[in-house]
Length: 106
Length: 122
Image (cartoon, rainbow over all chains, first blue to last red; front, side, top):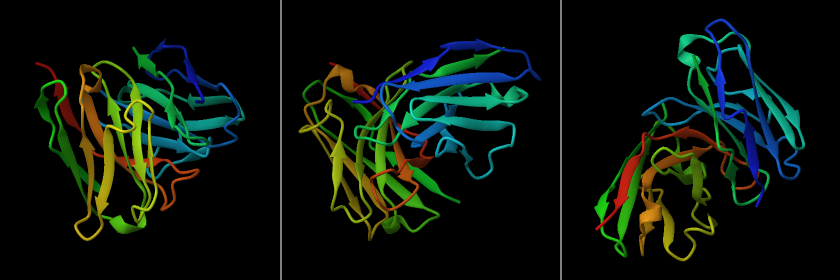
């Protein structure tokens, strides 16, 4: 099983600031990496797939990068609606595995 | 607009069974692989199971293998999961998720339902 490790667990930022979230895979997943956003009481929302492709309707302030075992989600300027938990997920191997999440808070 | 609506959750005793359903609309259901993903209270996401577009291939997490069965009815645009021999560790919100494509390899969930809560307790 590929273990996905996200850091930091919690990210304290102010609105308008940028944020960098990290995700590391225990073995290479090539570019088969997705990022999801989840707000309290809501379902996850796909942000990024293929490590760097924004999903439909996702604002340009979200960008993804990386390949192999190291990945990054960058939010260029956090808006109030961006405070949420972010999960990375690999889809290179079964079982599909998620990271433990990074909570972006004020 | 893609819509996924789960139902069938509730309170069940340890060792009991439950069947969850997910009714899909807004896309051609029979063209896409589908999954169940769960989230225990206050915890992260855990993939449970995936089925390909025609039901011919299924995959399960080790934690649910031989207890859960995923299936689909393409004529009724509905995804199912049968949950058997439930324990407290299965308590979670169960999300239905549409995959980006028809196959199961190198594919990922792109739309999620709002989830249905399964509580296993005596």
